[in-house]
Length: 101
Image 1 (cartoon, rainbow, N blue to C red):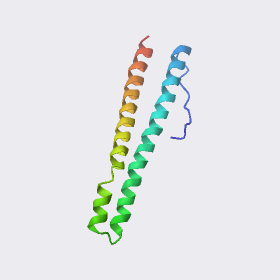
Image 2 (tube, rainbow, N blue to C red; image 1 turned 60 degrees about the horizontal axis):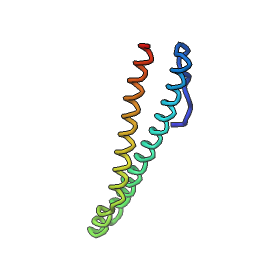
Image 3 (tube, rainbow, N blue to C red; image 1 turned 180 degrees about the vertical axis):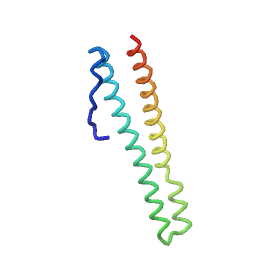
C-alpha cells in the first residue's frame, strides 16, 4: 500500500522483467483504488455507528438509509475489486507464460 517495489527475480529475461514491472505498477494502483473505495464504505459505516450511538429518531435513520451516495460507493468498490481481480488473473497467466518460454 506504500508503493514500495519488490525486486523481480534475476532469472527473468529483461523483456519479461519489464512486462512484469509494468503489470505490478498497474496492480499496485488498482490495489490503492480498492483500498480507497473500501475506506469510503468504512466511513459510511462509522457514521452509521455514531448515529446509532445517539438518540436517533426514525426520521433520521430513514434519511440516512435513503442516502444514495452509498450506492455510488458500493459501485466504486465493486469496479475497483473487479479490476484488481482481472489484473491478478492477467499477472498469473502472464507469469506462467513467461516461465514456460
